[in-house]
Length: 231
Image (cartoon, rainbow, N blue to C red; front, side, top):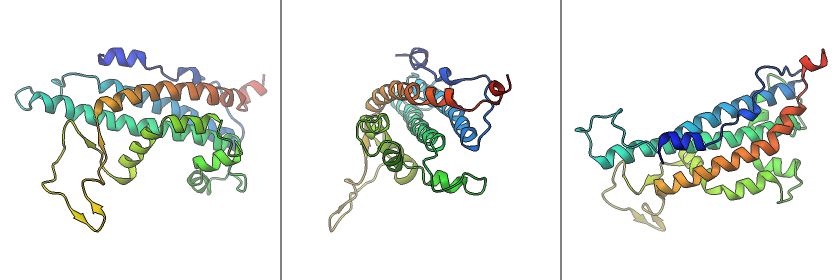
């Protein structure tokens, strides 16, 4: 698949665009609309990064004489995919935040300018599952997370915990393994194959677009709109 073919195959979230024809009048709807707009941009970025991972070779970035073919393909493919992982994960976080604000799941706090960071900090999938879906497992957020738990785990590792090792091209090699009292340094690393991540992200993109259509379109359509009220 070429970069162009991948880019055209990956559907954008233009179905959520309102061309600035929505002016919310409540704090909750304002924050919700902001995150819908952010979701559109984040998906566009993730889509671009994933499509770019299909580029071959990267001769516009490096001279052919400088690196062998394996370096040119694996090195840049790796970082486009790692970036796509993070942007897709951020997109899912924004869907959670849309639910959090629209349905005021932070219920014990009144939304103010001075506590919005605390409210966002408390926006967690476990609390959404509890407060919006009463911990029932057959809800769209839980089902989506289960289907894509591998992607979410890899993105979290990249953002918060550790580098993940591409089996096709090692960024750096450790020359020996440390073993001590139940610890094995080789066993603590996460190994991935780039083609597997590519395939998972292609499925993830389709899944998150469907999730956005199911959850964000009704939310977007229910936002208070000063333009309509004044008509």
